[in-house]
Image: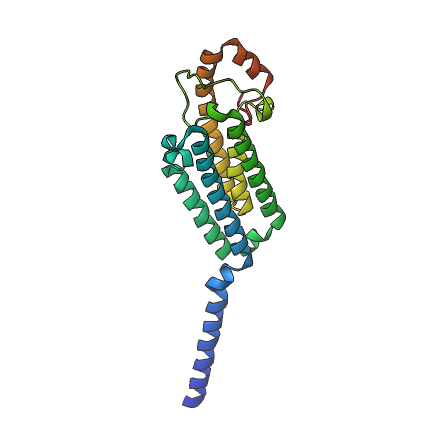
Length: 223
C-alpha cells in the first residue's frame, strides 16, 4: 500500500512539473526567431539613425560643433526606448502570438526606412541651415530652404523622425508604445513648430509667410 502511494506521489510530482514547464516558457522559447529578428532590426535601426545623424552634423558643421544633442539622445528618449523594450519582453512572454503579425512588423520596417531617408534628405538638403537647436538670431548661413524635399513639407526632418519613431514600435508590434510614441512625438513637434516658425517669420518675413501658405508643415494636424 505504501509502495502504491509512493508511485502515485511521484506521478503527481511529474505532472505538476510538466504543467509548470508548459506554463512558464523557457528563455530559448521566448527569444526565438521572432524576437531575434525584430529586436535585431530595432537595435540596428536605432544605431544607424543616431550614428548617421552624428556623422552628418559633424560633416556639415565640424566636429567642434557636435555634442550629445547631435545624437538626439535625452533622458526622456532613453526612458521611452527602455519602456518599449520592457513592453516587448512582457508581451512576447505572455502573448507570443501578438508578435507574429509579420505584415504589421514589415510595415513598421518600411516606415523606419522611409523615415530615415526623409530625415537624412532634409539634413543634407538644408546643409548649414540645419541645426538641432532652434535659432533665435539670424545667422549668415541660415537661408530659407524651399527646394528638394522642402518643396513638399516645411519640416521634413520632423516628418522623418515622426515616421521613424512610430515605425520602430510598429516593427516590434508594441501596441502601447505605438500609441505612446505617436502622441508624445506629435505633441513635441506641435509645440516646437509654432515656436520655431515665429523666428522664421522674423528672419524671412513675407517670403516665409508665402512659403508656409503653400506648403504643409509635414506633421499631421499642425498648420
